[in-house]
Image (tube, rainbow, N blue to C red; front, top):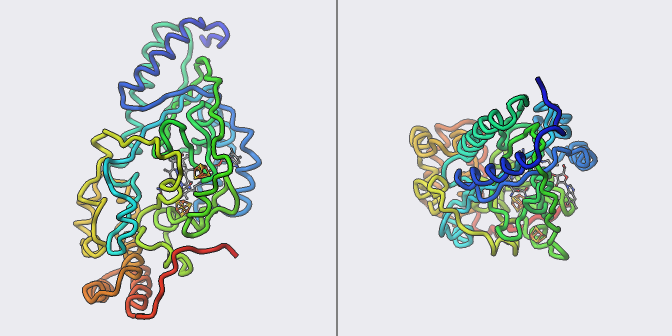
Amino acid sequence: MHKANSTLNNNALQLLTEEIFRWGKEAGFQQLSIGSANTENQTESLNDWLEQNYHGSMSWMEEHKDKRLQPDLLVPGTTRVISARLDYLPQDTEQIKILKSPDKAYISRYALGRDYHKLMRKRLAKIAEKIANRSREVFPEYTLNQRPFVDSAPVLERPLAEQAGLGWVGKHTLLINQHAGSWFFLGEIFTNLPLPLNTERADNKCGTCEACLKVCPTDAFPKAYQLDARRCISYLTIENKGAIPEEYREVMGNRVFGCDDCQAICPWNKFAKPTLEKDFQARHGLQDSELLTLFLWDEDTFLKNTEGSAIRRIGYQRWLRNIAIGLGNAPASEDIQKALKEKKETCSPLVAEHIEWALAQQQNPKRNRLRKLKRD
Ligand code: B12
Ligand code: SF4
Ligand code: SF4
């Protein structure tokens, strides 16, 4: 029989919450916090974002919009969200040095190690299992309903984590924690257990700063707290399946998988600590590789070297598409031009078109590479 929420013992709920936080630490999370599951206050900004088409080809952002705005449609009965933070910045990856080395490939720091989706979901599922066991002991008559999520479900993770007090949504739209910066992933457990809410909110500490808005190479922020994903290098190199519009190619520089510029410039990331998580350390030298070396990987090597990595999700042809742009922006070199011409014989028409662009860039001695775009 379903026992009404109000009849669950508050002390037992408080003790369970303390246990949940301990299990979170044991599982390697830096922080867990409990917030309300109400996201209806996001309706206007989500609608506005979708109406302006800022989601581009991510049609899944439109689907199940009702679930994003009403978590209990996704998991019936949900009244609480246990939000979790997992820091991912690998140790000593010298990101600025790589970004400024036009022969090198810049890969987003979140993607250098193991794909976070499975890793986090497994850990959250274990915590959910412990909650279920304890709940059976303490609240034997209560019908628990809960589910863990990481990233891919129709969940507004940042507003939910903000409500749980894990940080504030910065002008670059990412969640920032004043003690830990923004280099972290978010995950959560939806639950119908009436756990005590963390009522403390993190104040927005962006102040008058606009560094992230100004640094963005593609000028992807129409205004503070809003991102036009279609212009974001992360979208262009990862989510976008087609050609990368020419206007963005030069300013992409050597960023071949995702982009970190708006985070790297953020003053709050002075407080970020590198992760000790072995799975998030860079694999196969991806933090410091020549563009040409990566471009010369054949498909088998790509599949082998990206096993268990988020990079694999884009597939070999899109990988080549992105690196071709990086090579077009690299200093002129005979080796690069030879590799581009050879690859053009075997690649897809999509990649071939990017290779043609790269060759034209390589062979134009007068080119003066553009570093930043301005919106019209
Ligand atoms: C779609 C998506 C993208 C898209 C669009 C990004 C975007 N800003 O919406 C693209 C592909 C571009 C992208 C890029 C990246 N992403 Co992404 N992405 C997502 C995803 C799947 C959904 C985000 C979403 O709902 N967007 C829709 C918009 C409308 O929602 P929103 O930005 O959350 O906006 C709300 C608030 O900003 C608020 N709001 C609006 N106006 C205002 C005004 C004020 C004053 C305030 C306070 C709030 C506010 O209302 C909005 C609507 O509810 C989430 C996972 C998830 N399920 O949530 C990961 C997620 C947001 N991404 C993440 C990461 C790490 C990245 C990248 C850093 C990866 C990379 N290095 O390349 C970049 C960062 C780019 C950036 N500046 O955002 C992390 C962020 C962790 C964090 N610390 O915040 C998430 C949470 C994934 C995860 N599980 O960890 N991403
Ligand atoms: S990730 Fe890069 S391209 Fe995207 S908004 Fe941030 S700075 Fe701009
Ligand atoms: S760079 Fe400045 S404006 Fe942007 S998120 Fe960080 S503190 Fe806020």
